[in-house]
Image (tube, one colour):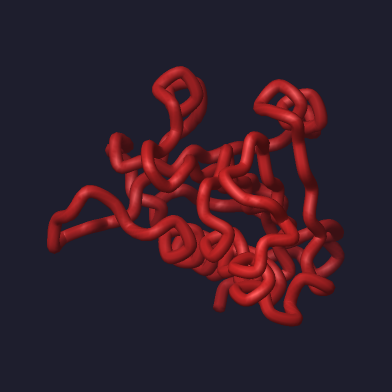
Length: 158
């Protein structure tokens, strides 16, 4: 269980170059209910005023701390020195359940159509979600939700 005296957000969900407004809206809702912060790294494949984004996020946006970055270098420049960033990828070998998440960790997800670029995922610890039934990948908002709730479970002991 986490230290009740700890401060800051439970965790951070980071979307690198997200393409679909609905997925980002759904991830924002997940962040709202978990007390996580959402970080969006440009370019986006949509506008934050997009109708699909607003429909997916509903009235949860006011409960989300949202950060936007011009690109990866901008995001990286603003990371605390002690930040732990985990890249989620179908190319990883370690399951997310074995990560040992801590309060304030960053969970990084790539764009829906192509995932994280090789140069980025190879520079970070990589985690994967089990897919025993096969398939190429999970939907971005589903993957972020599964990972974020597991991180929360590890941190808070639910």
